[in-house]
Image (cartoon, rainbow, N blue to C red; front, side, top):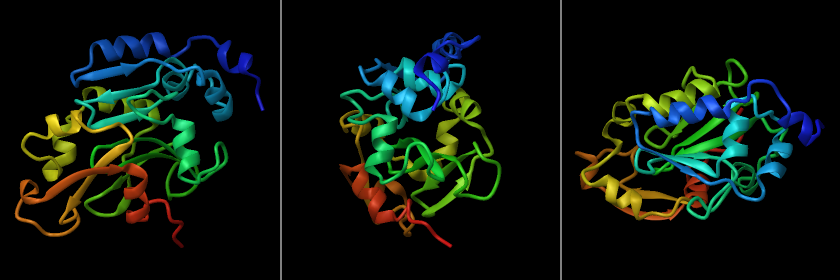
Length: 217
């Protein structure tokens, strides 16, 4: 285990550049303040602040992106109700040492995770669990590239027909530890997403129902 000093005392910390990128982002970003657990969380993860992941965990409580549709996890905040570390532990994952690390999620229960051996492909690559397919897919991006995509990418295109008219107001009213339970589910047929019923439920409940974290052969 590296000491906290080793994780903090690095050349070229990522936060100054990331803060500039956030300021220039084309998608709306709300930077949540870091909490008192930030140092403990960084030490638990064993990543340095030279990495983008370390910068997000140590310098922020998390990022709410595109009106809160995407939640990138940091050291936690009342608006999120969880930190990156606590969320992984809640989901029964070992930090560090599990075969994936949950780093974010979205308003419809999609999950973003760093591959640490769970999936085929390079370690460190971001995989997305899509609620409309109930499958994990590689985004072909490392964590830093993934953050850059969230800040400036076309999220409307990425989410396709998952969104509905007026989603911004509904998502803004939802707690950061919740996601929309949608019926018929997104993986089931419906003429359009606006004809589905929605209600906010704990994200942990949706994760359990979709089986996203079950180990499959």
